[in-house]
Structures are given as structure tokens and as C-alpha cells.
Image (cartoon, rainbow, N blue to C red; front, side, top):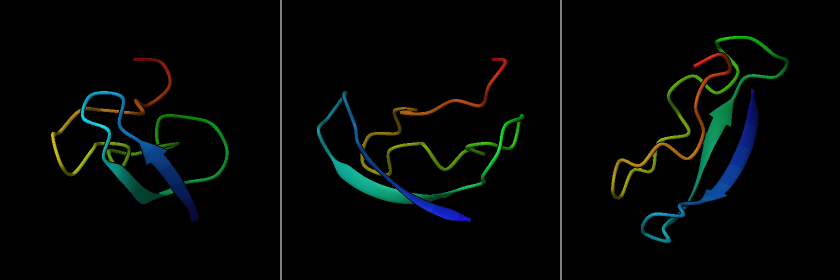
Length: 47
């Protein structure tokens, strides 16, 4: 697992999360979701 850092474009909250490496539907899991406002900063590929 790799730690990713993001800044939410919706509310500006900065957060980090674990991201799977490689490609596929588990790439970002659901962990690219902002814990402050719930905005999905990252979405799984193919959606």
C-alpha cells in the first residue's frame, strides 16, 4: 500500500489515504473520499 496525499477540490481539506499500487478497480478503493465533506477526489478506474 502507498500513502497518497490529496487536497479536496470541494472543501480544501487536505488528507492522506492508502492507495493500492498498479491499475484496476482496486487502484484507489474508496479511500480517495474526503473525510471532511465526502467528496470523491479519486474514483476507481472504469467508472
